[in-house]
Image 1 (tube, rainbow, N blue to C red):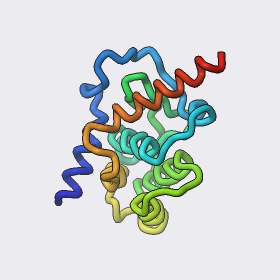
Image 2: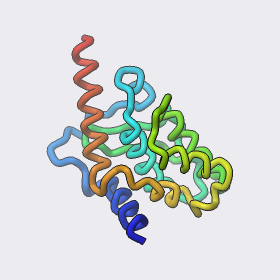
Image 3: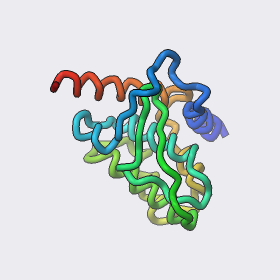
Length: 161
């Protein structure tokens, strides 16, 4: 149960009440555009998926990569999707993770989760269960990791202007 506790702790990092203090919430980036400027690390990709898994209601379609936004505080936002079977939602969330990851190498934990999500998605129980599978982003670290990513993208874009 220690793994489940660690994963639940990691998912709690995306509670809006735990946003990064002092961050300007009006600074928001679109993930699809940002990854053209600054590639995501595998840990940042997992942090985004964990945030999606926390917010996605059961039986709802996960967002497309073009619908994902991250604010300066490291919080991920996206519009609510249509209704869908839970097993398909898990598979689509795994495909979103694969798109965010791009070309490897990735930790074995990610490869295993992506394979299981495609072949036996209900082993995770739900999209939230899929998100708790990943313990590689430390509890409380997801929002901070994504806030740092947003700062990196903003600095990179400012340097091009």
